[in-house]
Length: 309
Image (cartoon, rainbow, N blue to C red; front, side, top):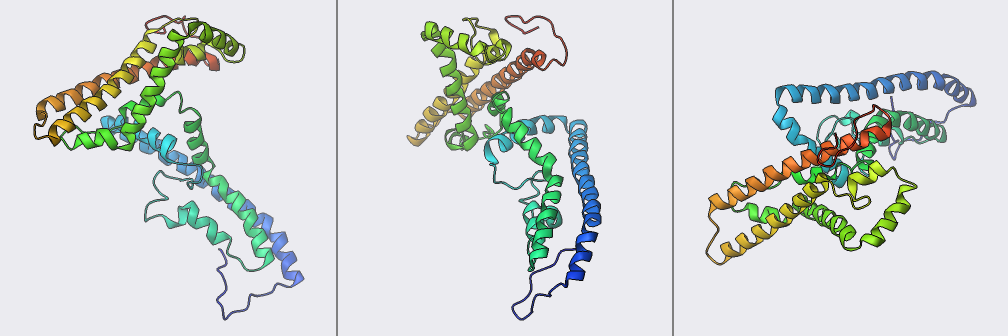
């Protein structure tokens, strides 16, 4: 379907004007067929993702739930704008499916030698890129809403609490560092409004003329109204930093020949992980309930102080 590059000993074939006119007249039909096939490919990739998710939810519900924060962390914090879009997650880095990888398909279309081949290839690339449009929209929708789903970073699995080598994992792994950065942000936006209330009240008053107060209320204090999900989020941040300092203390004890009992370390990590996971679910549930009416999907009951319903 695609014309490969000419070898050094070959001369690129020249098209006559008659042949060029025939190609130009036939190309719209070719493009229409290609557009239909590409649209089917895009729809099929979305269907495959949905079916795979549903099958995973029914056959391995626990593994599916555990994969949600990992997938969010990967898309929101690891994949940049230059990473090729993927019809199926992980396809670009795998050794299979060469005919469906963006980084392989595009070069195969743009290696023509004549100006006509290059022009037609440029048009074809633009149409072919539509097959990856759902993947691009999915990626940037997650990135655009990453601030709302940020508590998921707390439940990304990195430390397994099986042995004391996890001390290094808690101290130095990228997911654990991301958890601590988010926790510091939570602590700052919780403490600053309390310490600088007058300045904060004026700042929030200015925001309210541009941003829905319900949206603000989920993330920060509005008129010094402290809701339980603010307290829960603050507690999750303190637990995260506390786990880091505990791991650092245990690591220093181990380095001096008096390691922390494995049972104690295991129970501390398990307890913090469980409590922090419950806090994450609670904060996200409250956030969905608070922000749902903003999109005018359905009218929900009035917002409470402990639970939003």
